[in-house]
Image 1 (cartoon, chains in turn blue, yellow):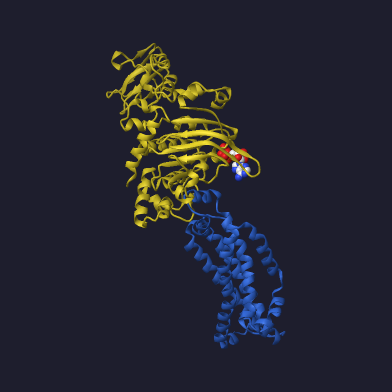
Image 2 (cartoon, protein in one colour; image 1 turned 90 degrees about the vertical axis):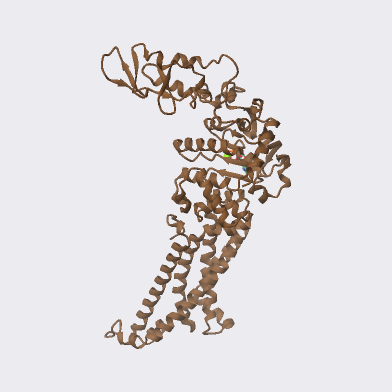
Length: 222
Length: 388
Ligand SMILES: Nc1ncnc2c1ncn2[C@@H]1O[C@H](COP(=O)(O)OP(=O)(O)O)[C@@H](O)[C@H]1O
Ligand SMILES: [Mg+2]
C-alpha cells in the first residue's frame, strides 16, 4: 500500500453511478428510521407530558437500547429479518432515533413556559387540546434540534450495516479494506459527510420556515 | 357579580391557602385583592374560573355556582391576564389576540378583524399585528395579554399581578390604560396585586387580605387610606398613606385666586406670556431678570396631591392652575391647597374614575360599591353592549 495514492480519481470517475446508488441507499437506510422515530416520538412524548409517570420507564428502555453496541444488535436481528435486508439495519436505527427524539420531545414540551400553559388553560383549552395546539407547536425548535442529532448519528451508524451485508456507503469501507485500496474509503467518508451536512442544512432551513419565531430562542442544543 | 361564600382551599399536602372567605365582587367595577405574597390571592382568583376548586364553600357567578358550569365554557367567558403575559410564542400577535374567538369557532376573518380592533383599543400600532411575542417589549406583551383577554368581550376579567413585571413608568401607563378601558367597557374586574399603591389607584373597592385569605379590611381606597381598620392594615398601607390619599381627591376643591387679581406673592411675581401661559417666577427682591420655573396643575383632571406637589415645587410656594391649553386660570398658595384638605361639607368625593352607574344615568345613590341596584343596572347595560 506504500505506493498506493489516497485517491485514484479514475476509479471515482468510473463508478459515479455506483456511488450514486450507494448514496441513495444510504440516505434511505439512515433517514427513514429517523422519520419513523419522529412519528413515534411525538405521540409518545405527548403521552409522557400528559402522564409524567410514563416517562421514567419509557426513557429507561430507550436508553438501554441506545447503549447496546449497534453491531451486536444487527447480528442478533439477522435470524428474524434475514441477512442483507434493509430492515436488519433500519429496525435498530429506528430505536436509536427514538432514544434521541423522545427526550427532546418531552424536554421541548416541558420547556414551554408555565405562564403559556396557564394562559391556555384559562382560555378554555383542555389538556390534550392544549398539548397539541399550544405546547407541541411551541416545542418545534426542540424537535428540530433533536432531529439534527438523530439524523446525523443515524447517517453515521448506517455505515455499520455494511458489516452485515447491507450498508449503503458503508460497503465502500469493507471493499476498500479488503483490497487495501483507499479510494473507495475516501469516497465513502466524503459522501457520508456531504449527506450529513446536507440533511443538517435542510433541517436548519426547516426550522427557519416552521419556527421563525424561535430565532432568538437559545437552548434545545442547537 | 361574583360571590365567594364561605370559600376555603386546603391542599392535599395540608397547606391551607384560603379559609372561610365571604366576598362580593360587584358587576362593572374593579375589585382589587391586595396582600402579602402567599396570602391566597391567586388561589381566590383561580377559583372563579375553576383553575382551582375550593375544598369548602362555593363561588357564584351571577348566582350560578361555577362548579355547575363546564370549565372550558366557563373560561371562554372570563378574561384572564397574568404577570408573564403567557402569550403563545409560535403565534403572531394578531392570532394570539384572536385565540378565544378561534376557540369559539368564529371564522378566521371575523376573529382577526376583532383582534385588530382590540389591538387599537389597547394602544398598539397596527403593524404590531404581524409580530411575534418575542419581538415585543414587556409592556407591549402585557397590552397584548389584555387585548387577548378582552377578545371575546367577556363580562368578567381576572387579572393576577398583570403589571408587576414591568418597570414603574410602563406600569403607570398600563394602569392608566386599564382605567381608560374600564371607563368604556365596564367589566367586572377582579384584580390581584401585592402593591398597595396600585390597589388604591385602580380599585373601586380594595380588599386587604391576610394569610389564609382572611379579609383585614374591605373599603373604597379613600376610606382605606384615611381610616385603616387596624395597625396591621395601617402598617401595610405605609407611612405616607395620608399623602397618597390626596392622590384620590380632586384638585377642583382648591380655591383659586383669579389671575386678574394680581400675580404677586410676597417677593415673587408670576410672569405670563401674551396667551397667559406661565413663563416663570421673577424674584423681585433679587433685581435680576432670571426666571425660576413655575409648577402647574390641572384643576379639572388632577388630584389634590398634584396641586400640593406644584405648590411645594414652586419657589413662591404657589401652584399655577392651568387649563387644557396650558393657560393660567388662577393661582393657589400652599395655604389654599391645605385648606382644601378639610372640606367644609360632605364626605370625600371620588373623582378618579367615571362611575359606570352614573354614566348609565342612575341616581347618585348608586355609587356605593356592591349594592344590588348598581350591579343590576350595570349588568343590564353590559348585556346591551355585549352584542357585536
Ligand atoms: N398546589 C399547591 N399545593 C400546596 N400549597 C399550595 C399550592 N398552591 C398554593 N399553595 C399555597 O397556598 C398559599 C396561597 O398561595 P397563592 O394563592 O398562590 O398566594 P398569593 O397569590 O397570594 O401569593 C401559599 O402558602 C402557597 O404556598
Ligand atoms: Mg399569586
